Image (cartoon, rainbow, N blue to C red):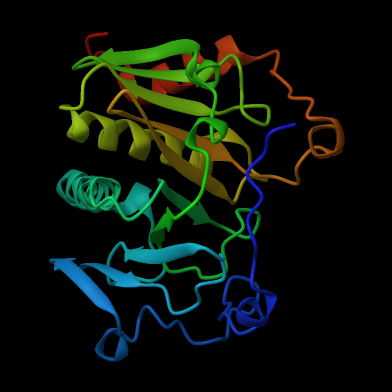
Length: 257
C-alpha cells in the first residue's frame, strides 16, 4: 500500500504549549508583542513561523486569525472572514509556487477533538519537502448533495465522506469566488458548532487543490470510529437529506439557489 509516512519529533512535541484542556495556561498568541518569526500581517491577521516544528522534513507556519482569543469563525464579520481566507490562500499559493516544497497543506484545528493544542483561533500551513500529493485526498470525497450554489461554488454535504458522518464540502468551479468560499466555510462552521449536535465542540477545515482550483472540507470531530481506524471503513449517515434541508432552512431560505 502506498502511503505518506512522515517523522514526528516527540522531543519538540513535549514542549508545545496547550490551553484547550489546561485552560489556565497562558496563550502565546495573545502575547502579540513577544511573537517571533513574523512573516506577514494584514490588520490583526499574523502569519509566522511555527516555533514547534514537530513534523520532520517540513516547514510549519501559523496563521493567527485575530486578537480575540475566545472567538471563532461564526463570530467574524463577513469582511474579516473574506480577508482571512484571501490572506491564507495567498500565502498557501505563494509557498506552492516557491519551488521549495513538493506539497503544501493548509488546514485548521479547533476544539479538544480536533488535534489542536491552543484555543486561540488559528490556521496552519505546512510545506513538505517530500510528500506525495495525490495520496492526500480523493476527488470522490467532494461529491455530495448540494445545499446551495452561488457564483459557481457548490456547497454540499458529502455522500462519500473522508472519515464518516457529516462532512461539508465547498467546491468552486473556478479560482475566482474566494469570498463565496469564505461565506460557505463560515456557514458550515456555524452550523456544526451551533445547530448540528450538542456534543460537537470541535472541527477541522482542510484545503486542497485540484487542477489549480481550491476546494475545502469542513469536518466535525468526535472520537474517531474504530472501524475507520482499524479497517478504513467510512460511514455515510442516513439523514443526509435532512441535514441538507436544515442548513438550507437556517441559512438560505429566501435566497436564490
